[in-house]
Image (cartoon, rainbow, N blue to C red; front, side):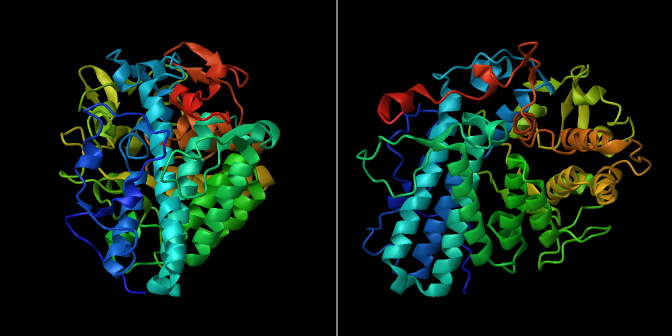
Length: 481
């Protein structure tokens, strides 16, 4: 398969930019992302005529995923500030105060944007897949399989992100609860707005179907470090499956998938072509975007930034110092497992104006840090948790210590029994993955009470605030709900 890298510009076919009909009208400060991307006036009749045009559409699919109001920032921010780790400084609803204090309702603009941007990313995929099917003879079997696999990976990640925050956890009732409207066909008009919610189980079944097809069709490597990090690979599909199965509580399946990437013993370097492994220095994970630990990230540049008030460094670092670390229990900064000489504490946090902030992401405008969506450290922790749950304590401890000792070489796990081990692994996730969008989802997937630092209360799984409400705009336009 011939790979073509388009530099400096990203061309997105106008057809692929057709939004899901539910997308609310954007305010003037929110539409800069789309306006900043040059468009080609290409008819769907000849959109698949050349390799460059097909690749342009593939690039457009990633642009939908990385929107600042979706996985380019807001999604991660909201999942971290919902729980116990952060204290809000500004009281600004535009930057998530209503999410932090658990008062956001179905009309909350920025939660609505997560829904809308997620479905726009999904519809881009559906439009592209329909075009790929209709033009199979032009594209060729090999490229069609690879590009289709990339598209399905993006759709799977989009649906996974949405179902985690807008539907009850799979583990609460084995997926029997209402999930999401499962949109799998290309929509270019509002004719099919009306669509009922599929069950949570049906949504996860589609996610796994897409990822299995993605794994089969994706290359192990593109032969370029940037493309290997910013486009879906076989390793990325497998890694995301470990996350999906962990969310579903299917621990043996996590082990099965994880073993495709992770050897039985330390140093746990992947045997696949990209040979993913933990960086020796945790600082390198956030300073070298194509490091050995980066499985899948979304890139930004000065001319392709996440957009106003969507950037991780703006919230968690010195950019606007919106959210600082909760240094009292139950915040992770007060947890004894996060020791004083841990490099993640000494090198990736800093005191600013008397408060402690996370410095993983730059606090300097225009905040163009690449956003890591899948890291090898997460895969190791996914596998450690699953191994602990299925009774393989020795390997679970080895995986846990591999992640922790990278930043704190003298630390050793000293707990006893399965409950202690699982708790230590969950705590390690809080330390290692903070500000990367995992905290609330980790609580929800185990159907645990969600302690809200902003509300000062624990929110039970039965509380309507436990997950985000389906936006009013969707309810108004989708009679199937």
